[in-house]
Amino acid sequence: MNIKMHDILIKPINNIKLYITLSKVSFSSLQIYNAAILVMIIRNALVFMLQIALWYAIHKSNNDLSLPYIINYLFLSQIITVMYPRASGRKISRLIATGNIVIKFLRPISIFTELFFDNLARSFYFFLVNSIPLTIIYYVMFKQLPHIHFSGAIIIFCLYSYVLCFLFECIFGCLSFFTYSFWGIQSLEYALTGLLTGKFIPLRFYPQWLLKYINILPFKYMYYFPIEQILQHEKSVLSTFDIFAMLLYLLGFMLLLTFAYRKGKVCVTIQGG
Image 1 (tube, one colour):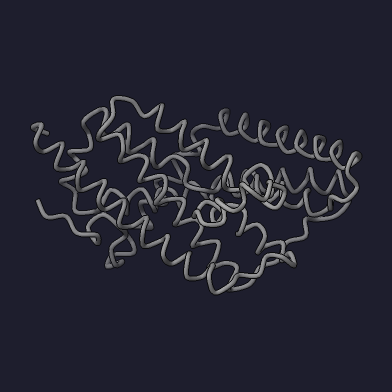
Image 2: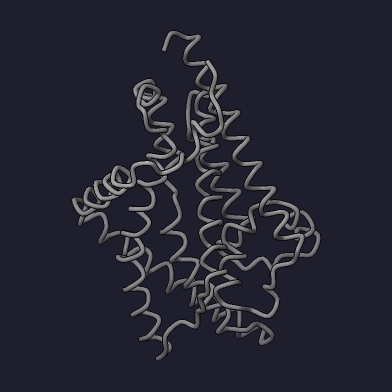
């Protein structure tokens, strides 16, 4: 069975109305879970305030830290966390476990196209319901709004990070073709994104021996670099190496996803799926 890269990644949009419909359905479905969304908002707000309290305590013992930078970094990290496509791998794993992935094989729309636009709707929804309360908390605590900056280049970079995270999620989801449980795979994914992306702590505070390895890996482009670009920190200028590495990682993730999906699909076919 011949599977080409354009069959599993987002195809040229020949029918934009169809993709918009997919996003609208996903956005509307989220409004059903009002209680769960409220709990999530409260949880994220508590996590944000706890992180601020912890960094205040650290700042008292180390005045060299730039507290405004840390607070803005934590704020953006919380927003990005709820926006990024975190459910794609789990959805793919569930489809594989139930056997419904076979139905997706038969549909004219790629499963990854469907997941991508589903995630766009989810990201927009979670941005709306989380950014407003977090911004209010920020303003109440510091009597000012977060210091963030946007430009065309920054938006493009953020979109790149979003796509990179989506591909990363899908790759881990496709590993479920070859395992009995997604739990272990997901634990590894959470460990990688939690430790190596700068999700919780800015990478600049990591020890130099660890940064040497992180700087040659793609994970810093998921959280740390987008946040640094939005904050326009003096050390956040992209180099030629960064641009080249970003393109290389994007291509590498696409090829890896293509390979994993192709092998998984063949595996299902051989087993009679």
